[in-house]
Image (cartoon, rainbow, N blue to C red; front, side, top):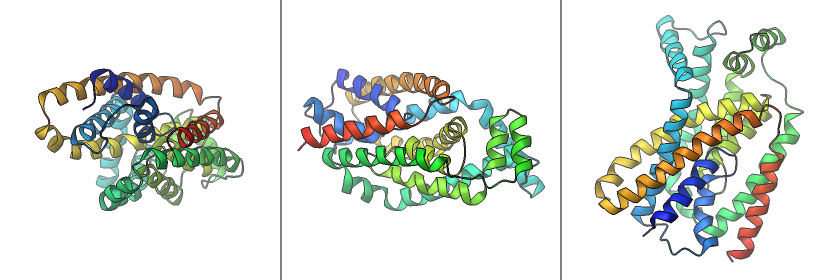
Amino acid sequence: MISLSQAIIIGLAQGITELFPISSLGHSVILPGLFGWNINQNAAAFLTFLVATHFATALVLLAIYRKDWWRIIQGIFRSLKNREVGDADPDAKLGWLLVVSTIPAGIIGLLLKDQITGFFLSPHSAALFLVLNGILLWAAELLRRKAKPAANGGEIAAATEAADADRRIAAELSWWQSTKVGLMQILALIPGFSRTGSTLAGSLMVGLSHEDALRYSFLLATPIIGAAAALELPPLIATASAQTLAITFAGAAAAAIAAYASVKFLVRYFKTKTLTPFAIYCAAVGILGLIFLR
């Protein structure tokens, strides 16, 4: 059984690592082993705890970007009513781009998530994939300089002059590029690979700036994390004890606080900084995990 102090520590770590490109699930698997905590990570109580912390993170993202989501949802319904999606309505186009990017991981997650997670859910494999996550982030920085946006120059210039991130993203991303970002998100099903990291890497590789890539990644994370957690959480809560629920709530609250702080920090950071420090961190922590969790 996870203790209250352990729940708060893991919750804080989850809230940070879910949104930083350093893999929340990988850290949740590695941390107990590094600290020598005797936690049964296959127990229903621990699964309930992890799902609840993910749900808390999704709620924080939804709260922060609530106005943006309202515009995007209105745009989607507007496009359905008008039966068209074009550059003239960037909110509608961005909404459908997010849908396209969500489909690959959504399908694979529904069909194979348990098999993938179960096969790789060990501290040793999580450490190995954390190293690979670092390599992915480093490679994305190198490939970003060679990537070319698909939209034509006039559309990009007009969107950039509008100083509106959503218009920029809608102008620069093509449907095929949004599919590529969605395919990258499949990697996040493997413990050790970061959802934020994989979508950031995919967005950078297709030509988005760091700032716009982060925004697209956060918007993309909200429905897939929230929907997955919302589907899994009710049956887990129904069978959980009062003590488990109390500890889970404490961990989820800690994750929410950490997630809010993480969003505020990362939005400022990626205005001028790169993924390189996170790549180095993932490689270092993964290598340490491989050494000490043998």
